[in-house]
Amino acid sequence: MNTTVTEATKGQSSLQPIIIIGVLFFMFGFITWLNGALIPFLQLVCQLGEFQALLIAFSFYIAYVVMALPMARVLAWSGYKNAMSIGLGLIALGCALFIPAAYSQQFMVFLLAQFVVGSGLTLLQTASNPYLVRVGPEHSAAARISFMGILNKSAGVLAPLVFTWLVLQDLGYITADSLALLSEAQRQQQLTLLASQLMAPYAGIAVAILLLAVGLRFSALPDLPAEAAPVTTDGSESSIWQQRHLVLGVITLFCYVGVEVIAGDTIGLLGSALNVQGATTLASYTMAFMVLGYSLGLLLVPKVLSQRQALAISAGLGLVLSVSILVSDPGSTGISALLWGWAGIPLLPDPISLVALLGLANALVWPAVWPLALAGLGSLTPKASALLIMGIAGGALLPLLYGALSQHFGAIAGYMVLLPCYAMILYYALWGCQVKSAR
Image (tube, rainbow, N blue to C red; front, top):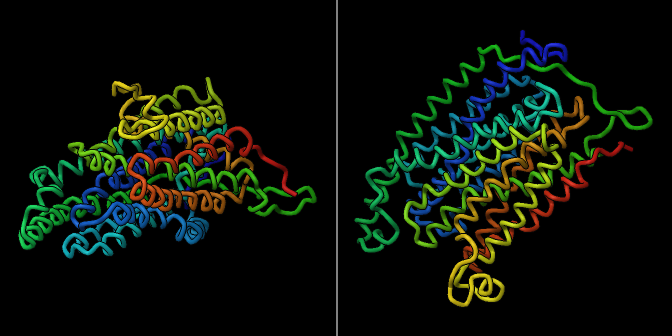
């Protein structure tokens, strides 16, 4: 029988669960942000255009939409602890699928593997995020999630570097330009060699995660007790769709995850478009700024800033950086030409640096939105968590919109998709997160 956490013992018993959840956040941060290196790598291996390459992110994040409600039922049936263990098992299966994908060099098999990994993370996040909100005081939930974010994004800093070291350490000389000079047979030989480099690392990751799943299943992680559902003014149970702050929270997370993935997963493509060396490692810079942002959140929330204030500041910074990216290309005209000066002297940082700085703007959005969106939902929390997880679909759809815009208007102009997203996040911080009485 699982141990339960009561209000009287939360403060004393929350440290061990937080340590265990911290290990999980580091692990799925590593898996998630491998995409920043995997996308330009598979673009080369499978000979893809920008839009096709971003289908790698789409297949990963669309699982959060397709599988969120089924995973919520798994959570309700199995409890938090077992759900997390099952989620880890699915992630291990998805990583194992990279082996036949690399062997066959079939792009569709890579997409299937990404979808399975995303499905496992859907269940893991559906369970772990509300667990963090409920395992301690609600007003400090953003600080707890910020701590997890430090672990998550620290793994994100490491992932592209480890990927490049394991996969490309002896093959950095293989580029799109070098392949173009080869005959068809030689080119295929080089691509096969590149693809084969994925097998051993992903096999190791699959085994490690499977062992973690077994360890979690037999750990002392406590479950949480059931709560009552919120009620309407006439005393009847409230519908989840009557929770305005939740519904707007889902939309906000949709926008947020979209801009987070764009910042992390397109910086490598932008680097490739600008002929920057080591494009597969650029995502690490975005993750490093996210770690800095999470660290600031851990220090400032709730001691100096409320969760809403942190969210509003993050959205404002995102808007400023988005505009700066759009006018940062010295080759464009109009406002950008004025900002760069008639002598060609840049008055703004280069676009890659600005995209990396989006990590700082993005860091506190996720930890702030979750407690604000789940406020007062009681027994509706598992289903509400599933809806919030569905918001991660923004990571599937908005990068594709960026890809389409960048193919037609240029890599810099594609970042115009960020503007309405940060505007929505700012609206939620200022007005949308207020809990309205159910009717």
